[in-house]
Image (cartoon, rainbow, N blue to C red; front, side, top):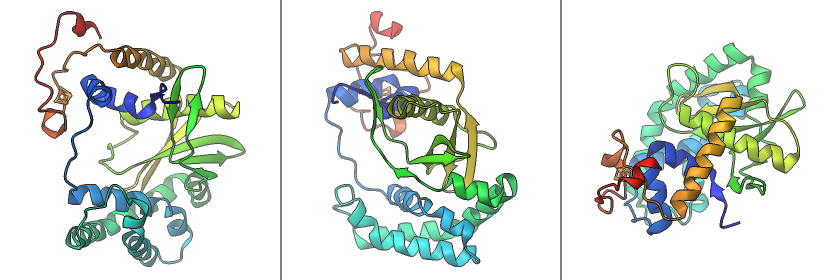
Length: 262
Ligand code: SF4
């Protein structure tokens, strides 16, 4: 399944098509572990058990406990990624996440009010966790954070640890959900009508319909990525996030006229 386009490639393409090119052409430079990376892993691990927080009688206690468990288990779960982490950085990240707990609680309470407690628990309960899904038909692969069953209808959700939009979900997350829905539909021979994004740093859970126009977009983007994998260096977008890109040193090549069309 090595030749499959990954859903993460589609997400990277939306940030910058050139990142996809370098992902396939160059070995990724090893970046030092940062405290914010460790924070995001802690939040991701906690989010897996937010349903327990919704069901608990004391959300403050439940969140503190989740954080303690995540901190204790993190280096065992992310063995490879956190191989060189020092204790001080882990401690620092745990304390930053602790400072977010009140905000997470408020977000969960707001989600309970908006969706209802039972529905929220359903949306936070995994029927399978991080399954790797394949589409033979479209040559795609990817892994949702949860497979869901809501009102006997299959669905899926992704956990995001970055900023949440004021309302709705980010475009990149919508496209990611759509790509994963296409995979799930082929794997389980079902129709996925909606997907869920958990903005875990804020305790916010948002459900969205899977749109036909986004399905089309996913398939178009997969085709473009296939061309990039075939060796085409894509145009560098004006708003590319170069300041945070690990390929910045490599990416000094002036775009060719032909590359601008991809
Ligand atoms: S340095 Fe900028 S243009 Fe180049 S791959 Fe990274 S984000 Fe894209």
